[in-house]
Image (cartoon, rainbow, N blue to C red; front, side, top):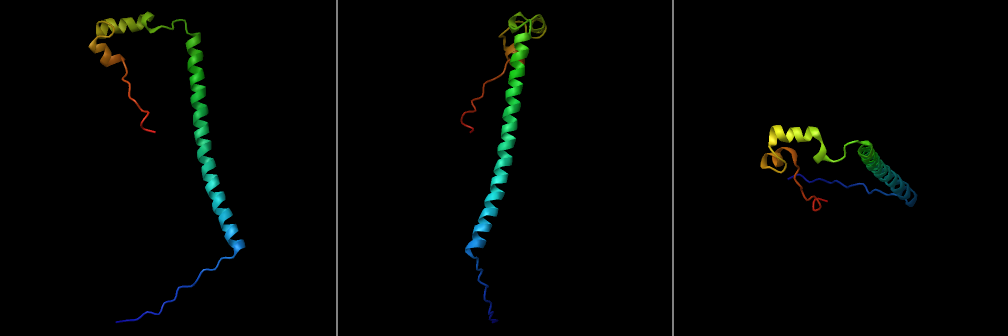
Length: 103
């Protein structure tokens, strides 16, 4: 049976080197966190601008109530017979999904 005489070198780090390495690691982590928060901030800014644009379009619209929209009433007449019919529910209405527990 072979015997190995392997001695691992001890790594010696001075206080100054430790502080420098810690500072570099902190800078790397901070720059990554900054990049992530920057992406989230840009996304939130886009959502706010989009929401403001939708509200502005809604305020400027001449027809603001869907039940008075002639093209929607034509769609109901041709495809779904009447509002709130089973076919209309399937084609035109959305379903609520509770997403509060996802986060």
